Image (cartoon, rainbow, N blue to C red; front, side, top):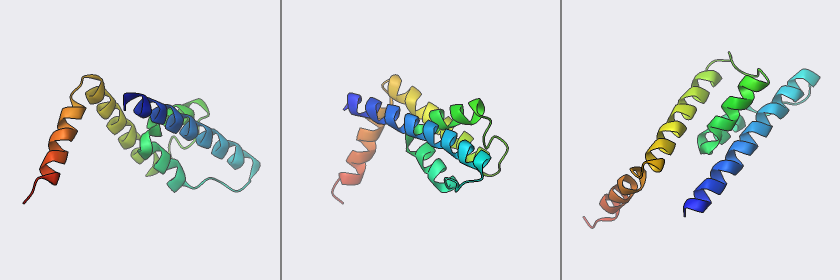
Length: 105
């Protein structure tokens, strides 16, 4: 299970990073752009660190509101979840929540 999560996070961050760089390139060329919804979706799905890094490296969408605010929110949430997971706190919390949901009424 842990390996699957790590692979997913690597893939999501790579995809988010590449999408941000491509969108910057498309903007410079005047070509059809990648929607902000798609960029934020990949940030939400775990790619916020990659998306945030790309926005700083290629200087893309750093001041665009509310995009930059949502990107920062997803980044903070990702970092909190990663810290909880690394400390071994996240799995017991999820197990407890799922047990409550699945408990017979």
